[in-house]
Length: 365
Image 1 (tube, one colour):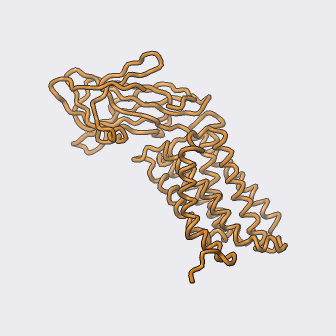
Image 2 (tube, helix red, strand yellow):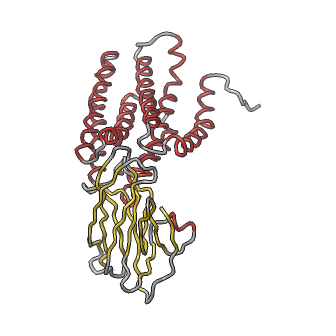
Image 3 (cartoon, one colour):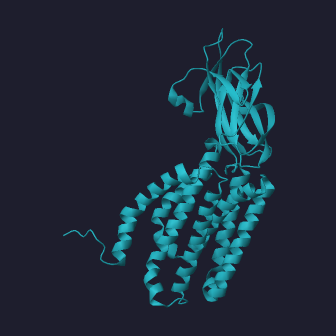
């Protein structure tokens, strides 16, 4: 007869891993996306991430104290099988939040690698339970989670972005990890001493990978995020609203920023609009870098760059636009980027010349 209720700890953990864990992953991701992590600068989001990080560090400490004999009370011995599940839960919450936050900031054609890595860690987390009993694996995952948090939290606190802020975030992550490992060394010196070389290698490798990803534009420039963007026939600002003239399109095309066709009449200018979210008290400069695809050379060539300052705090993002006259036919793209070259988003379109102005509709933003 099939058993439906767990008879012991092993059965309970098997029930969790096989049935409850995938359901918890889906439910947690939906709640995080629509309720908890709407904005990167909300104190409630930061508080929850602090909780997950603290829970992860506490679980790692308790598990290793039990394994090394530092905690011998019967209560802790019985709790030991559940501690890897606690670590799995907390890291799952962290990487779920990171996938949501970083994907909102990513220009997927540029930053897809980092988002895919985070998604792989989130999905793989459901099969990592047995690895969470390994000390070096625990430290590596904790450092990854800590660094992923600090590289957007520090810019929010300092209201600045840039390479120096990223390096400061990395240095702070290494310092905090060193303090944590020093605390573990005080509690279980032989255990830490036996793994210190592998820990140093893991932390160093993770730090190097993050730096390579950042300086190749693979890490989205959080806390900035592109909320809306597009190419238009005309843009006018009326009061607090922008009036955007666009070609009629099916509803689903509003979600596709690629392969947009812009039908341009003689003498008509091309307008590109963007709304970039930034946290409250955050000020920076956004650039619109226009590039044209050179069919002969098979590469993108910069045509013009326009910049304007933005101020944070608006849910829908700070709005701005650039325009270009005498634009030739062919493939175009406009990179929405920071002054130090980090790409917030990208608008791609193809210009086709037509003899007269096409029908347009007006929308507001």
